[in-house]
Length: 334
Image: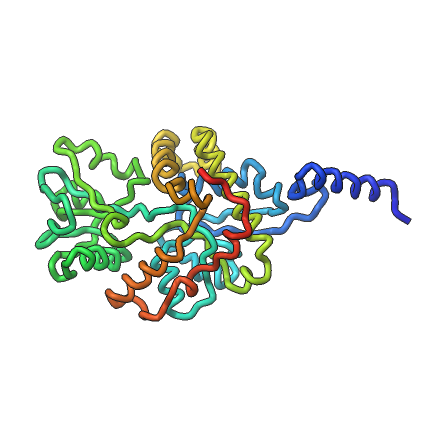
């Protein structure tokens, strides 16, 4: 016999469905537990995912999400493969290296439509293009060596045409390097350059032959095949979180700051404005929707990395990207 309570619960769910609210999960329903591993520490670059958590957008989809911070020693591909997390954010190079080793990881979306890595020089050096790098001291982390090689190759130069030095922004200000790699999304870190009396010049990897995206969402290939519904719901919640962060940036930064006492709200707010305006939403998201990935761009990036000897030449977009989740998700176009 069906109890009155069970009948009313079923009727309530049917009513929600009739109103187009079929994704709303009843409060008593069991939530699916998921761990999301970030590539970096809690900051504005993860604002959309943090907002989705704090505003209950994941919970609306029946997901109980724990967001794990990354950092300089984080390897989100390995953490996903080992089961530390079901989903992670990752950068293009580590995804390509994973595919090169035949590891069962693929991207299913990308929060950042453009990788923000940019090279800065001070105005007095008059370095206005990659061609001007010849004979110069180029500073970056060791992990950026391949990106440096790629932009040099695109501009007809070789790695031997420069002096590569592991350096950060202080190295530029102290005349240890002529050019240094940084991220325009980190306004606080770049402040000494942005306020330099003689001005500054920039060359982004995006504008110089290396057009990969960033903050890719990755998962094991078996999970993409077996639980695509969960990944679709996850992506839709992230979409809603980023849209909310774009429309309510101060509130979004308050939520980010609640995850880490190290957050300086005013500086992170400035970074979030740049992230949203230049990297989350572009002409491609306006046409195709949030987290769009271009297979053609993946193919071009793989070919570039193969040309400079970083990966095998036979890899294609199908080795690093599964488009089924993007195709199934309802995504905001803005």
